[in-house]
Every structure is written in structure tokens, then in C-alpha cells.
Amino acid sequence: MPRRRTREPGQPNFFLTPLGIVFTTVVIDLIGFGIVVPILPLWAEDLGASATIVGVLTAVYSLMQFVFAPILGRLSDRYGRRPVILASLAGSVVSSLLIGVANSVALLFVARILNGISGASYSTAQAYVADITTPQTRARGMGLIGAAFGIGFVIGPAFGAVFALVDHRLPFIAAAVLALVNLLIAWKRLPEPERTRGPVTPRRELFARAMRHPSIAPLVVITFLGTAAFAGMETTFSLLGERRFDFGLAEAGGVFAFVGIAAAVVQGKALGPLVDRWGERTIMLSGLVLTGTALALLAITTHLWALFPVAGLLAASGLVFAPVTAMVSKAVPDADQGGTLGVLGSASGLARVIGPLAAGALFDWSVPAPYLVGAGLFLVCLVIALRWGRVPVDAPDRSARPSEG
Picture 1 (cartoon, rainbow, N blue to C red):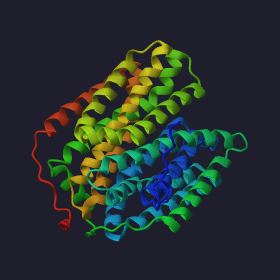
Picture 2: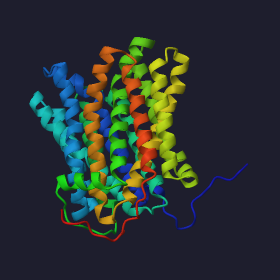
Picture 3: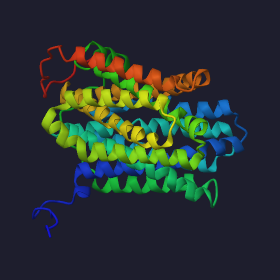
């Protein structure tokens, strides 16, 4: 019988390393977020919110990420990753408690705005990973953070459903407790990484600088279009399952869990070795082809036996976004990591506002339309990526300080 692999003498447990702590932080934060997501619409409805107001409550989270991701990123460049991450975790504690005790829709909006601002620190967590990894291991580190996102988002709704059986307020209290535990762990064990610090650049200049950069601008566009397409699929999939396969919430949730677990495995286990062998750009191109194909197949899938292979293929999205993040982080000086990754997070946040709205309208027009349009967007991303690969870009000066904007 082969012996189980053990750690080398003196090698710390992964979960006690800085990367492991950030991984755990993202998992616990997304568990808390996932707990809230399926219950919030029901709670808002109980407080008198219409379906339209529920939609706005959902969208305001992503809107805050669009606004604040680059702001928090640049603050972390100037004042440190650790303070921004800790402050964001504290915001998650307060926002979850506010939702739990809310007695009006107005207070729910305040809580969701604070929750969205806190969630914008995801880009700061990515910048932290960029600080503690080498260029060669960057994609592997970003893949682990993507896997943490998927794991937390799968576990969270299940926890929320269980807690909601006791009381509708309990999931939000549980989310606050998890965020508090996360805050205490990070306070005790998360060190500030060594890196070059730079001045805080105005938000408008951050976007202008990123979109002028010949290596970064195409990746920002790919992030926006790919995220919009995928968010549209997520928004309408339950409706598709109901129309074609007579799914209820449990069945649709099961498929989402399947995709989330598959994506976590792809990013956490497969991505690193694949990038080591083939390189980030090749893996990104493969992910674009596979994800676009999956969306196109989803548009025409009418047999239940075919749904799960297609759903599994959607996990290839993990081969797109983690390499994109790694390539962006390697294209800028160390002092610009937080702000530039914040621009990427901002593009993703805006896509998660526009994508669901567009997909809902397309679904009302024709059931296959959101998935065919999504496949088309991934095709556009592929064309952009192929063209971008011909642009020669010099490696940045890693010690360079960004200009004062």
C-alpha cells in the first residue's frame, strides 16, 4: 500500500500559512454571503418589498463592488492589505447583523450597501496573493482563491436553508457570527506582506491607466464580457430548469452545487499543473472555448441526461478568470497591484449588474437567447484574446512606483 504523503519536517500546515489564511478568509466570507443570498428575497418580501425592489436589493451589492473595488484596492496599496481586509470583515459582521434585525426595507438597503462595500475587498485578497506568490506560482494562488469562492458559495446556501427552518432571522445572525470568527482569525494570524507601497491614485485615473495599458485593457474587457455572460446564465438557470426539466428550488440548487464543486476542483487542483505545463494564456484560451461551448450547448439541451455533462463543462470558467487575474497582476508594478486588481473587480461588479438584467429580458423573449448570446460573448472574448496575444508588452519594473495621477 502506498504511503500517504506527509509534510516535510518544519513545513507549516497550509492553513497556517498566509496563503492558507487568505483562502480560509475567503471561504468563510463567502459562506456568510451564500447564507444570505437565498433567504434575503423572502425576508425583503415579508417586509413589503415588491419583486422589483428585491431585484434592486440584489443588484446594489454588485453596484457597490463596481464603485469600491478599485478604491479599496488603492487604499490597500497605500496603507496595507491587512487593515483593508480587517475593516471589510468588520463591515460584513455589521451588515449581516443589520439584515437580521431589519424592520424596514430602507434598513435592508443600508445593510446591502455596506455588505457590497465589504465584499469589494475580494480584489484586495487577490492583491495579497499577488504579494506572496512568485510570477511562476501566481495563477496557482489565484486559482486557490477562486476555489475558495466556489466552496464558500456552495456551502453557504445549504447552511442558510438549515438555519431558516428555525427562524428567518437566524441565517443572518449565523452569517454575522461566521464573519466575526473570520475577523478574529485574520486579526490574530494574517500578517502584512512585504511589498512596495505607492500613493493613492484617483479612481478615474486608475481606470484610464488600465484601459490605456496594451496588456491590461483586453483582459479587463474579457473579464467584463465573460462575467456578464456567466452571471446571466446564473440568473436564468433556475427558470430554464423549471421550463425544461420541471425543476424546483432543490433541483436547481443541486445543479449549482455541482457546478460550484467542479469549478473549485478545477481551480484548486487542476489549474496549477495546467498553467505550469501550458502557460496562462493558453489555459485562458482553452477556458474561453470550453465555457462558450457549454453555454451554446445549454441553449439546446432538452434531455436531463445531457444536462450534467454540460453543467460540468461550465466549470471551465475557472480556467478563464484566475489566469486573467494572474496575468493582470504580473503586468503592473508591485505598488499598483491593489488598484489595478480593483479595476478588474470593478469590471466584474458592473457585469454582475448588467448581465442579469439583460439575461432576464432575453429569457422573456426566448428561452435559449441568454445562453446563445452568452456563447457569443465568449466568442468575442476569444477573438480579443487571440488578437491581444500579438501585442508585445515589456515586463514592468517590479519596484516602480506609480505616477501621481
